Amino acid sequence: MGWAENLKELGLELPPAPKPVAVYVPGVRSGNYVYTSGQLPFVNGELPLTGKLGAEISIEQGAEMAKLAALNALSVVHDLAGLDNVVRIVKVVGFVASAAGFNSQPLVINGASELLGAVLGDAGVHARSAVGVNELPLNTPVEVELIAEVR
Image 1: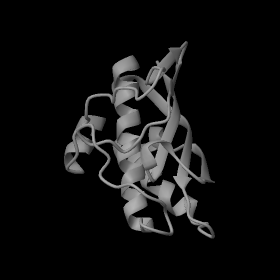
Image 2 (image 1 turned 45 degrees about the vertical axis):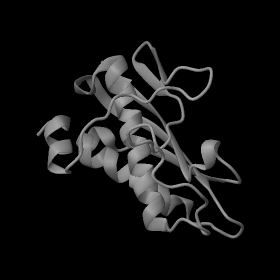
Image 3 (image 1 turned 90 degrees about the horizontal axis):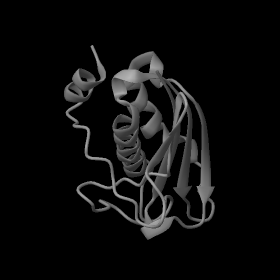
Image 4 (image 1 turned 135 degrees about the horizontal axis):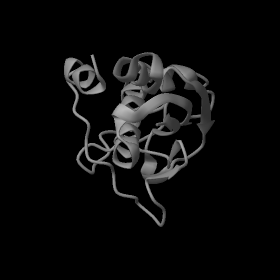
């Protein structure tokens, strides 16, 4: 199955690429690579949840937010190169707004990694960093950026 069928099987649709919330572009294609800006878990222009992991947000909720942020990143890649042209997701960086003492950032960013694998198969397997931070824009719990190799 292709990415579109995989999304449908997951009960998801590729949303329109999110609009920037400041002075930048959602992504840049340079040669055979697409670099996305950090994507937030917007749904129809709204953040479903705000707050920090280990305080207001559970690991499961955070993983769902990471999944939505990764879906938005895929939308950017699709706009710039087409998901049919993705050779592989090379790198994912996930930022997790973390309350003091919270150290399960990898479990949160697994939401993004699992989505990429489910949608793109082997091409979605990637290197990754999961970073805990004090604050993120708009009080979002997660932000995800990625690098995709494309044809």
